[in-house]
Image 1 (cartoon, rainbow, N blue to C red):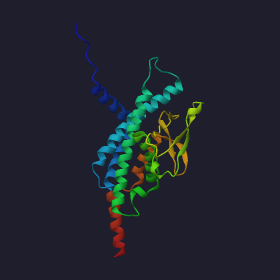
Image 2 (image 1 turned 30 degrees about the horizontal axis):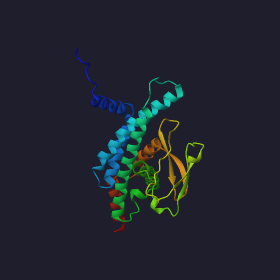
Image 3 (image 1 turned 180 degrees about the vertical axis):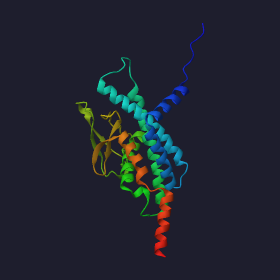
Image 4 (image 1 turned 30 degrees about the vertical axis):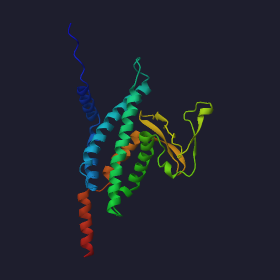
Length: 242
């Protein structure tokens, strides 16, 4: 008896990403524009590929977020064990780390160039976005609180959600080789993964939503002046001074 044809995972993945691009066509165009604008401003053409890859992943996550939100609203769902949140969280964490590394490379370029009043990385929108990504990246990738080497004393933490027992209270000590921090996670009303980030320098803790991070990153595409236009503006300013 012939065995049934094996499902091709690669074909499914191609179909899934194509569906996401079709469903979020305008967002796909925005990611393409953003990649060109930022890569051009930082003279880092290869970053176009990285940003477009993060864009593809964002479109897929937007589909998952929309479907989760719809399921929560209608109450409909499969009766089988559902690992959707597990995979969505996994992909969301990869997206956060990838975006952080790209923006860090951009920021480093500005640092190496020296102080410039029109530098992209000094824009408040860029700075606050990068700061939020940094707060998430360290616990995700290294199980540590971001910038814990700057801590002057151990940090008292409370479990979220609480266990209602002695395990609710714990101490994070940067000098403890066994230290570890696991960020509480959840889902926003629109089905996007959220993380409870800790900024010990403030000090404060607050929830950060993946979809909000993506929207703020895409907004840079219309805020940042493209390299060609910026050069023309600089040339015009120089001509006025001569």
